[in-house]
Image (cartoon, rainbow, N blue to C red; front, top):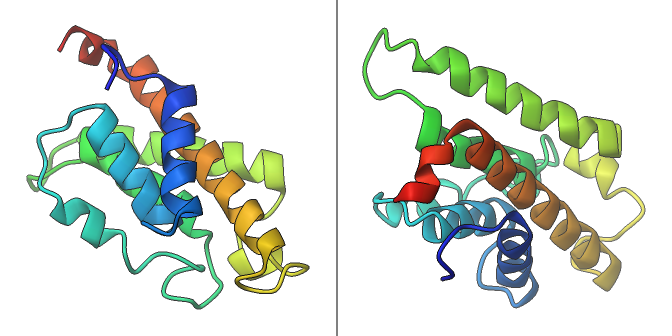
Amino acid sequence: MEDHPDPARIRKIAEEYYRVGDFYCSEAIVKAIKDEFQLEVPEIVVAMASGLPVGIGGSGCVCGAVTGGVLALGMLFGRTAAGDPAVEKVMALAGELHDAFRSNRRKLCCRVLTKKTPLGSPEHMEQCISFTGEVAENVAKIILREKPEILQA
């Protein structure tokens, strides 16, 4: 890893994880963010993202890239204690991520986003790789904006 996390590099790393088949969208985002920001969290966080691809367990609902991005934001901004007001910040940041994706894509539903591309086709793969990279980069930008001290680590 270079000295500081770079959103464009994080995008490429997440896309490559998906492209080569190492991880699906949500997992690729969590893994790229965890590793590139050198977060001291166990690898189990990547496993926590494993049920999110293809619109939450293959149901075609909310895009797995977006849900994986929300999970990644939770690693840095979420709460672990009852009553911790940190939940307000992470909810606002998750809403920002949601709104950014929706403004670019107009929809968040996986089955709608991929309607014209059969599951597993090259077109489907490229589209989802693009979604994965876009969300990973946006998450990295949010982290750097909201936690600039992370660059001092």
